[in-house]
Image 1 (tube, rainbow, N blue to C red):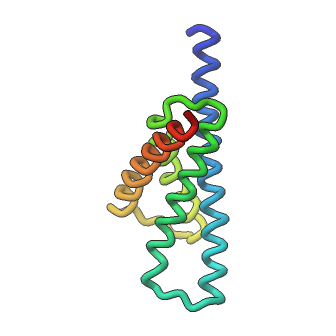
Image 2 (cartoon, one colour; image 1 turned 90 degrees about the vertical axis):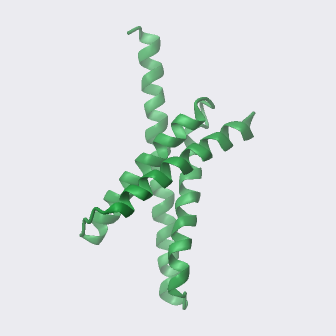
Length: 130
């Protein structure tokens, strides 16, 4: 492999790692803020899951935006990978925080949802910047 291709590949994965870490960081901050709201306000149980999905969408969007900031190409592919990695990494982080690992179909569905969401965010970010 030539040096140019190696550098390009390295940059590609650095962007994806950066986007994934931004997404997980945003999710942690938003979930902490939401937990504080739940603690001090009476939030009905029916609102918790939808708010968690909104937090996931916002987090992935921020992550994809951060990844595509310097190189505005391959938004679909980068977004899909960031969404998938976000799903896996957030599963690990929140399982560690809860001191409980449980793997079921909801984890697989969440992975698929986050991947599709990441791909859509990648398409949106690339086309907004054009």
